[in-house]
Length: 381
Ligand SMILES: Nc1nc2c(ncn2[C@@H]2O[C@H](COP(=O)(O)OP(=O)(O)OP(=O)(O)O)[C@@H](O)[C@H]2O)c(=O)[nH]1
Ligand SMILES: [Mg+2]
Image 1: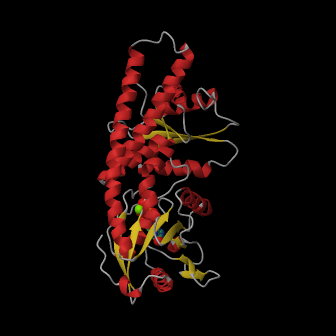
Image 2: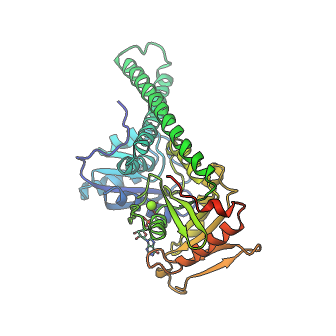
Image 3: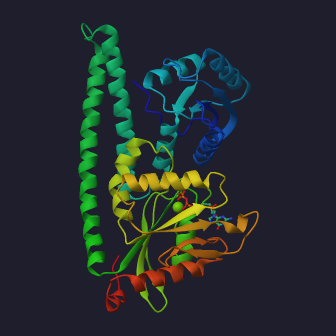
């Protein structure tokens, strides 16, 4: 049976991370992997870096690097090796054999975090779907490999039967999950249409994972959305009403954080929710202003927004965490050429600059075509 890549609960929780540099600096990427591992309650005992022009087809890294990792494993008590790259099933298997240790890739790690964080029924179904699709792609690829090796003839035995049964069972479960998700999606669509009918302005808080979306959401709405120094603290969308003085209510949603190279099985599984939650009148795009890679994170978020058809929705960029800035800790805002507030510097933690968000929203409401009377309607969420 091929490895699904999940992390079992009784596994000792320490890992060695491996990242290769293919010409682009992988320092930041490895740091992100480290944060992902910590978010998954893993202890990172060592980080192995390397340079290559291209991955080795059999083991991803070269022999020298394998020896280096093996040595680290014998020196530490790590029981898991995490590669910061997508490994083929063959590479994963070869590496596990040669290192005599469990080996997973970044996708498995992210899937594992999502599996731990999913709270709602829908979130759980989405994560299971993503995990099964990941597993299915491995089964198929592993099988193709065997077929090629043995010419596909004379391969009648328990191996084949087992694989076929696995594939059939997986396909059945995937179909079942997709149907269940469709039903839940229909229910949400009904709620959304009710909100649209009430003509209340809707907005979503989007942004890179750990940017401070939930902290801002909680500040604005006095809600208790889970905020933590973890990647993917929020998986399920939370929606609340927000009262803007002299204007009325808007409906605001906190959403799952984005990350670069989000495993495609997860994008597929979360697509419906993502597409739906961002189909709002406006996006508050929260950015960790003190992150050294904030510009790259902004680009990644915009890229994903484009992929889900949300790139035309007006955005207000929120540069958060200014309380940690080395210089210029003052809250401020900038207007664009049309006089609209386009960018706000604030601290969701201290509350500094929060009023600017309310001003921006009040102005947006005033400018929108929504009839003012109707904005005061109570919204049923
Ligand atoms: N110093 C400082 N820390 C902040 C600020 N806003 C949020 N944080 C911290 O940043 C971390 C992440 O905050 P969250 O609100 O959970 O971030 P998120 O964007 O919702 O994260 P995910 O749901 O994981 O995508 C937490 O430790 C917060 O306390 C801020 O204005 N200043
Ligand atoms: Mg959050």
